[in-house]
Structure formats: C-alpha cells, structure tokens
Length: 130
Image (cartoon, rainbow, N blue to C red):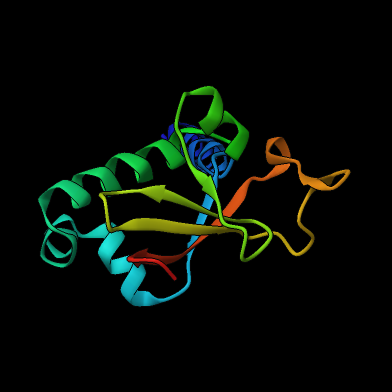
C-alpha cells in the first residue's frame, strides 16, 4: 500500500499549493493575527457587529487571488491618501480594517497601483483611524 500513501501525499501537497494561490495575508503583529483568528477576542475588542464584519472581510480576502477581484465582487474599500498602497475596509462607523500592499515593489500601472497584480496584503491596524 506504499503506492496509495504516495498518492495521498501528492494530493495533500497539491492542495497546499492551491491554497498559496489565494491572496496572501500577513499581519503586522501577533496581536493583530490573534484578533483576526479568534472570533472571541475580536468580539471582546471590537464588539459583535464589527467582529462579524471583520470575519466577512477576512473570508473574502481568502477567497480571491488579487485585490482587484474584491472590487469585482462589489466589495468596497477606501484608499488612504496618507500612504501609497494603504487601504481600509469599514467595520463599523468608528472602526476599520487597515491593510497595505505587501510587495517589495508595489505593482504600478502608470501613476496608479495595479490592483490586478496585488496578491499580498498586510493587516496593519484594526480600530479607529491611524
């Protein structure tokens, strides 16, 4: 049954590779990662409605391969003028999920960011304005 085991391993490896094709999300700190990964912690820190919105956005980020696809899905986000590549998603009236482009060289198309080539984001802040 060594052949069968080999087949299972290759299936697992293939699945893992496919997962890497999605939008890659990193976190500025361990605390931010914990807030995003723990619904209980998110509720405690943000309240029920904002925590639910955070979960929905994170699921959407995992479901796409580029930031441009978020726009195609009808998901709205704002560009922050303070820094190139910084965007925010509204969680509630006062709270936002801030992400920045996490590429060494931000993909550009002329003067604008080419969101169809942005495949990596970093969560940099959750809460009120930066």
